[in-house]
Length: 468
Ligand SMILES: [Zn+2]
Image (cartoon, rainbow, N blue to C red; front, side, top):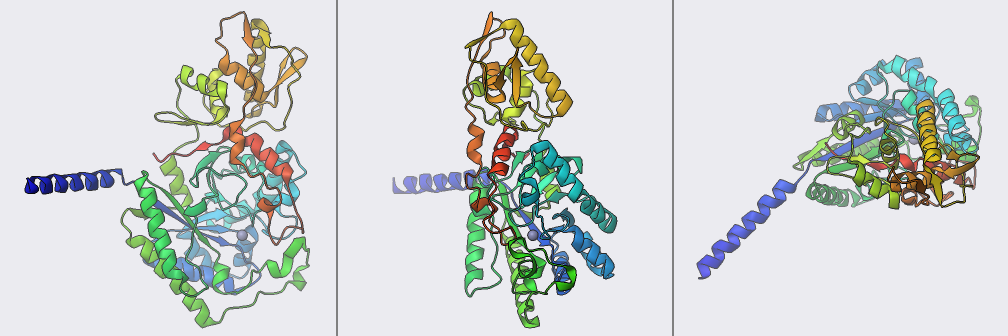
């Protein structure tokens, strides 16, 4: 009897182990370096050293390079640095980073369409410089500091940059990658964003434990992503190159730029050692792989969903406008609207402005509703974005009210009953317009509620990304 119990217990433990192993998903580490310091030449050497060390460890990282930094490397003839970085993946980290105006500052008072054009006007040339100097189109973009604006999404798509890789608090989904504005966002990763600190005694061991814990947690839930970043300049300087020159929006002439305080050579060596050991540790954890921004895109597939079960998606959107996970797919509220309108799945933006409904009735005659639908299809085809409002004669429905009405409509009754919006995707955005844009380089007290509101409007495109 006892033996039997023991056997049963052993079998049960084996069963548990097998279940856990079967459930364990891959854990991807995206290791990225904001390569931005064009003031301190020692930061060039730091980038070279880090890139070379990682190549030696067989790890490919993503170096997000500032346009001005790439031009400075070219001017200084640092082709050794360019070659070493080019063995990794090249991302983009804005044209000038901290020379005012920073992106949030110039985007805040612009609308969606105008802001996208302005972002492209200011930032495209830096991406082209990266392409000229490194020979590749950058795979990703991430804003300087917290200087985020949703208008960048449309501009980045036009620039052929498919991934948004950074940290920030303006928008986030479950501390894992998500689709937003047609880009794969690896952003706001919460407890899955971490690092081994370069300073502070005893903190390194703790960061190994933190990594191990996060990796096993993600493996247990079928896999996921850990985001880790540094700046090469941190390895050679004890203060940020831009904080000493451009704090609080200061505009300083080149001749007056100050170099940041340097670490001693021994201190720098200690820092390189911390990174090397940390990477070696992560490599040693089973199930952990390193991936670049572009590799993440391959792993997560495309933002364009397959065709859908109409009844299921309509029932969802009629009650709440937010993303929906189906058996295979992840659908944004915009994906569902397009499907219900009979359009091909495609990347579109959310509405450019916020409009309130003026239509007060509770039903729309069938013929008028059919015209409204056709007009919406025409708008989306022409502008590649959802309209802010849909006209019913000379009255209008907000896009939210229209979407709820469309989803609830059976398509055959004499009237379409008007349903009102319940924009649940808005819950995934920051409501702190000051804290979310807090950055030493922004003008003192900078606050951008306008950008958060535009961001929320683009929540129509928000949805979880799923590993293929
Ligand atoms: Zn930066």
